[in-house]
Each structure stands twice: as C-alpha cells, then as structure tokens.
Image 1 (tube, rainbow, N blue to C red):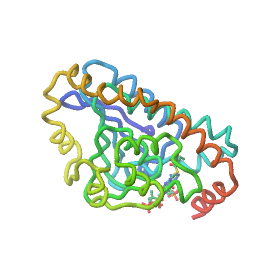
Image 2: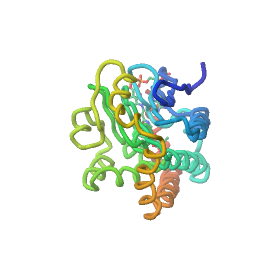
Image 3: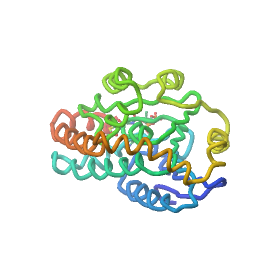
Image 4: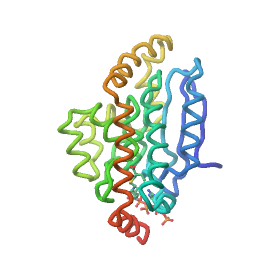
Length: 251
Ligand SMILES: CC[C@@H](C(=O)O)C(=O)SCCNC(=O)CCNC(=O)[C@H](O)C(C)(C)COP(=O)(O)OP(=O)(O)OC[C@H]1O[C@@H](n2cnc3c(N)ncnc32)[C@H](O)[C@@H]1OP(=O)(O)O
C-alpha cells in the first residue's frame, strides 16, 4: 500500500487518505504527488465534495516529514518544497466544490495548514491540533498562516500561530477552528454533516464557493501565500531551525 489512497465514496464524495499511520501521517513527496492527483480528479463534475483524512486513529497529519525535509539545508532548497506545497494548498483552497478535513487525530504544523485550506474541519472528540512551527524556529511555510487569517478573527489566528502549542478539541471548537466535533464513524459523521448540501446541484455549490474564492483572489491571497512560503524558506536556512529538527529526530 502506498502513502495515500483516493476513493470514490457514496453521495458524490471523493476521499483522500494520508496513509502513513506509523509516521503519524507526515507529508512526504509521494503525498504531495497524491494531493496534486486528487485535486485533478476532483475537477470531475460528478464530485460533490472532497474529503481529506488520515489513516489510523492517532493522527490526521503530523506536518512535513522531518526526516525527509531535514535534508533541505538552504533557503533555496527549502523554497522548492515549500512553494510546491503552497501551490497545492492554494488549489485546495480555491477548489470550486466544498472541501472537508476530517481530523481523526492529532494535526500538527503542516497538518494544521492542510486542514485550514479546507472549507470545513470536523474534529474527533479528544484530538488535538497546533501550529507548532514556531517551536522549530520557522513559520507556517505552506500558506496556512495567511489562510488562517482569512478563516478566523485575526486576534485568534495570531494567538494560535504565536503560541505554537497544541489546543484541545474543545478549545478548537470554541475558537472556531473546528466546525463540528464527532465521535464514532468518521465518514458517517461527515456525510451527516454535509447531508443537506449533498442534495444540491454541483453548480449551486460551485457558485457559492466562487463567492468566497473571488474575494480571496481580489485580496491577492495566492500572492500572500507565495510570499509566506518564501519568508519561511529564509528562516528554514538558519542553523537554529536545523538544530531544533535534529533534536526532534534524535528523540
Ligand atoms: C515541514 C513543513 C512545516 C510547515 O511548513 O508547516 C511543518 O510541518 S513543521 C512541523 C513538523 N511537525 C512536527 O513538529 C510534529 C512532530 N511530531 C510530533 O510531535 C509527534 O510525533 C506527534 C505527531 C505529536 C505524535 O506523537 P506520538 O503519537 O507519541 O508518536 P511518536 O512521536 O512516537 O511518532 C511516531 C513515529 O512517527 C514519527 N514522526 C512523527 N511526526 C513526524 C514528522 N513530522 N516527520 C517525520 N517523522 C515523524 C516519529 O519520529 C516516530 O517514528 P519512529 O521513531 O521511527 O517510530
């Protein structure tokens, strides 16, 4: 089995599952390929909504695979990976159909950035999530910071990014990062959350989605996301970042 699966589910849902539970679903280059693939498949007019989740019950996604990306030493090397992923999240954000992240477990760093790029975030009761990049002496580098400022009041977004800590599911729901808390079968809960929307014509859902994507285009969000990736790349090239990652890998 590869690092991801793509499956067509009932009610017109397209499901992308990050399948590296033993690495807490950390993102490697294969998963980036998979995200690019699923975004192309989602353009099919039969798809009503795209759903992203992680395999297992421990993690949605633990961010970038530090053992792989630790090999990127300079700002220029990091910029290639960061800007590719920023482009993927921009496509996900602008997809003309609803998108859902099912946070079946912990979401950390880049995992929170992926979730932020989705229209809705459903969290399993008891999960945790945090933009911990600050503890690694970098910022969000896949565009998730700029996206979070669009999704939440700026004081809440700044606190979450600056704290760089894990928040509980209850806190995340209260802050508005999570739209729904579930327990039990994740797909059943997701279908139930989307039930009334899935009855509607794709053209209707797309028209509504475009109301927000046009706003984001007009405020140059894609350019802001690209700038965020470049700024992160500069911090990435600093020795202090490499030391923090080495500490994690040593553990
Ligand atoms: C690079 C992009 C950047 C961005 O732009 O946003 C980022 O994403 S930075 C943030 C990177 N992520 C992290 O800092 C998270 C690191 N992981 C953890 O804190 C913990 O693993 C966890 C996610 C809280 C889970 O804890 P736990 O359930 O106790 O599992 P373990 O810690 O024992 O991990 C099991 C296994 O998985 C490996 N692992 C986990 N996360 C990553 C990761 N991001 N990259 C690579 N490998 C990861 C961990 O090393 C263990 O491996 P083994 O020792 O081989 O079993």
